[in-house]
Length: 268
Ligand code: NAI
Image (cartoon, rainbow, N blue to C red; front, side, top):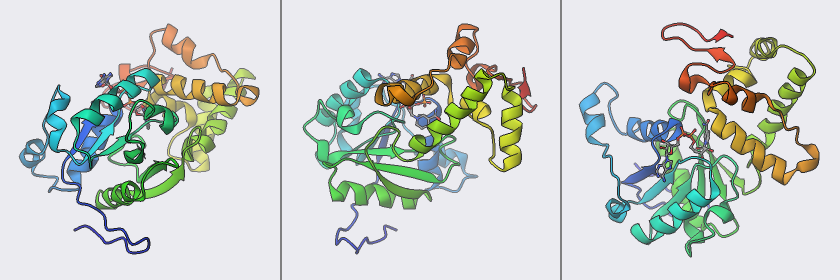
């Protein structure tokens, strides 16, 4: 059932078919979130039948919304948006799950900036409640209303935020992560910081979270902030050191922590 958004006089359009581009950590979580909102979870066959894997954007001719969730690289996202603009119908919402890239840059190579919007989910996307909806000055009110409605239908808490480095959550979160890395640089133990933060009440500390989110994202977000705020960004060597030592986080079973099937993450 699509609720009516009466406060700005716009009725949400039905979003019946969604294409998710990129099947990594976020793409698979977002897909799960979409499917779970429409099915009985115990009917696995039905869930599978709602999903179609495709390799060609020509299959997007009847989708109402695209959510792009590929790696955090500007030229790749720009190329994808210029291609899907041609492949999708003219009403289709063009959303990106980017963590930090300026949406005007993502949509720079399209002429559909009114349909470009941020649909920023948090990992794990089928569990975390917040959906940050990033609007630019060109995003149409209809696009915002439609995505707000989808957010509510999939039982998220949709919050509209402005288009700036890190948007609202990462803008707040990045200095916190940076402070933790500065402490490590001063000689404080990584696992002590994580234990302290979990005792404080957060579900996990900043280093375990980095292991979960993946270092590709951590490095990309760090670069965005360093470019935007060079005078107040600490360029921590930690993540790069881990990568150089074959540690990619939970993804490959070892990061700050060791991940073994069936047991809790172990400090390493
Ligand atoms: P990931 O590395 O797990 O997945 C990226 C996927 O993109 C891979 O499956 C890769 O095969 C695919 N890909 C690469 N080039 C492609 C192309 N040309 N066409 C289709 N697929 C392609 O990365 P992750 O973590 O899922 O991040 C994806 C996006 O979500 C990034 O923009 C990231 O900043 C954002 N994000 C990540 C969060 C996290 O906690 N990891 C949280 C919120 C947003």
